[in-house]
Length: 168
Image 1 (cartoon, rainbow, N blue to C red):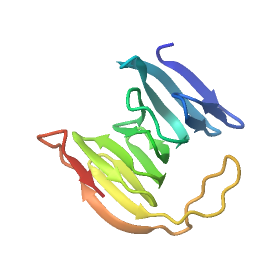
Image 2 (cartoon, one colour):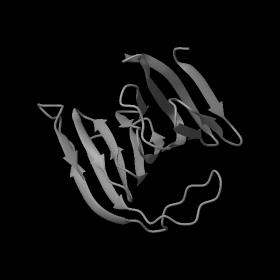
Image 3 (cartoon, one colour):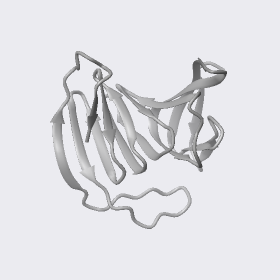
């Protein structure tokens, strides 16, 4: 259904938006799920993180037809063939972490690549990139190194050509 909402108070909920993809909605998270259209017969799905965090994992090569986007605030992260986490820090701030594969993030008229092993914090017109060090994680747990190294701070300006991509 359009804009169905899920609120997870305790435990976690797993969604399978498209075959071979699992999104885990972590405790304390509220999301809205919508089918935004169809591409070659497969759905285009958007999961809006209103509050909290989700972890997306893809298993095997994905279809090129359907699309799956995880959004929060002003960002949209394309979830396909990757292992990413999206945290809604506030209505104006979000953190996108790429564990495996790249996270392609659309914001402020541009598309930015967050490479595996990095986390990007987006807030207003600023993007902060940090190196992450994966640590042992158990079921439903995601951990970053205690003191991530800041690699860059970038001022994001609207792009006159929104199809340009910036590699981070």
